[in-house]
Image (cartoon, rainbow, N blue to C red; front, side, top):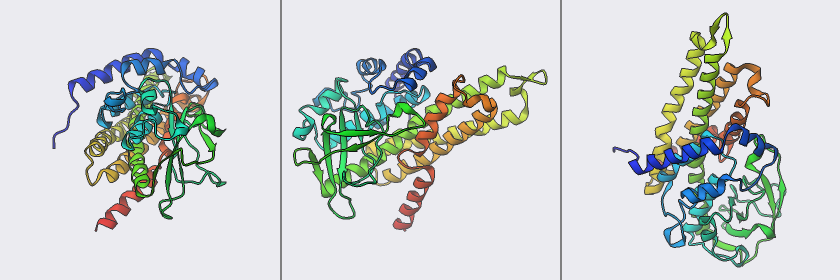
Length: 356
């Protein structure tokens, strides 16, 4: 199979990169760290560009495109550690609601959920696990603190009572959870499920959440690609400027090897992530395994780039004054989000053993 992005897809990526380079600088990130907001000033711009409504069906005001079209844009979002919930809203919630034919589903969510997402009027968050709202072990949901819509679950697939609910945030109490990266706005929802908010049950809910988990792993991996490249670039730039023994430290072979090793991991991870996006869009039988491979590769690449870039910078790399720490925190957080590398390697092994 020969795979390549179209000219339109790469042009779209370049346009988004140009905008984010100007509107999401490290100064903007610092401001977002100090005062996190669900929809910052870039949300309107991304909506007007067609990024936010990209996965919303055309019948509901969106572009009706797939993960292959989005993956390059998520990579750009990762490159700048975008504080807005593009991954949660556009990569996860919108496709999930579209798959359930969920615009306006559930009186508690209000009419036109997909239309509202397409117009940039709301942000959304999706719970990563099936935990009952009365449980003390409720799931922490990325983007829940400040989201307008929440996709939450009750019951479990194993017990056969899994339910999927689309809930208006005004009916939910969200307990904020401290995070290494405060712009991800983690929270634990406390809520009461009702028949009006229920949008799927049983096997349909299980299929929807399984598909969302695959998309989440791949979309998170795409952001990790951008973060990895940014960390390597920042380390290389610092290595050219930092002098030791009268020479830039980048001239030392040990530093070159560190950066080259991190770059190799990135180059191996990138096509794997793109391939997973294609597999999900095509609905191939191995799409779930491809998503797990992508997340494992991207998490490993980001973790290695974080280690190397921090080593090149030295202790200053983690200080507030250094820009690198802003990127490191997002990379460390996303490396564990929606399953760590170890989690996904275990899933790959399980799928191979089951198949054999």
